[in-house]
Length: 272
Length: 261
Image (cartoon, rainbow over all chains, first blue to last red):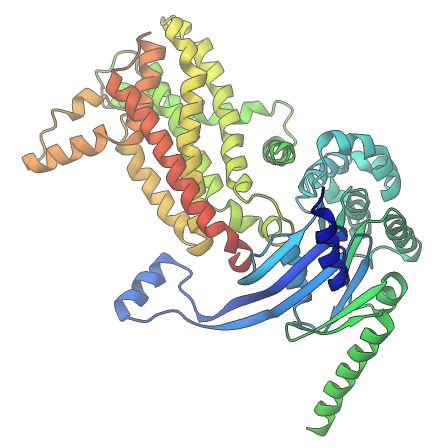
């Protein structure tokens, strides 16, 4: 216990309490290989080997040297143009991708909400799909059973819950997917553009749930092109551009930067 | 760990449910195919070719059911990662769950067919003895062997999309190099045009992993005895070897799956 103050001192110097960090990224970079020509078949591999042709590719850095810490309970928005590295960042946080350099630490249970309805199978009932989807999102069978009523209520599917989901409309599918996703219990939520689902009333219901998570001190990382959502929900926004963080702070400011960036882009296009 | 088992369980149930959806007597379909095969192979080998194997239908089934388990598992597991890109790109879970769930679904069917086989044994005048109690254990050891290959083939299909075609051909060759419709003892005295060739074929068949498994099943089910110690050792070595090689290669390439699928 004697050493504790020393640790607190250093963290005080840095202005961060290390125990309250939900996410800590140090110098993370991610490189994708983009192939001009790739032997996707054994057949071509053999032909290319015989011809002495090697696979040609170039490296594209989706993220470059990103360092970032997010405190527990923060809601952080990530904005940026297409291809700026937003989704790559989320995928690094949940281990779908591994970084080429740097380290990534996420504390606690992670819920990855990059798409709705992972593992859905069209042939089986909505009810059974709830268990499938829930287990993939990290909910145990017991937890899923406890929340089943809540999930079905939220989806507003009523009796349709027992019908195979191939009979559902796209709106119903999305509602079911969201009902499961929003009932996942986790410490860190990684959400990618899935909030804009259903009609306006359902959207309000979803956003109310996000508010609820915030009240319960959950950490949320939100990727969205919808600046209004970011401004409304986030206490902080990060602007990514070509794989680097170019603004990090109060949402209004980052969004201004983002708009400037976009304006300069379309300006440049107009000049050309 | 618990959650992972549950994903596996759910995927297996999903596989089986989708497969048997809409048929009241769902399991019927998984039994129909081996049954038809039994009839046609018995017709050809017993009556057309005139095999000397005693009690051919049982002899054949003891080799054929484990073979179907292997073949269905690999055909199901090989494209499993490529066919489920969203489970790789959009969520995080141990990727090995995907091919292994395809294998486990086949294992469930395998167990169902084994139950029928056990029930059928007395009808053909062959009462199962005590050694038949080892059946579930042997099936599980074979599942470890098949699981290793499932990992191997699913990972290689991610990199080379034509592995499936290669596998189809491989399975045909592998089937005939396994003593399923013939006895292992016949192979030891083959008279091919060259002595070297005869030796080679005999060795390939003798040390074909499936030969060891098939011999084990036949020994405990038909002869109520343990197979020779060498066969027991081989059965374990093949399972461990396949599982460790499959696991090693799979875990080496799986971190990059999300980028290539």
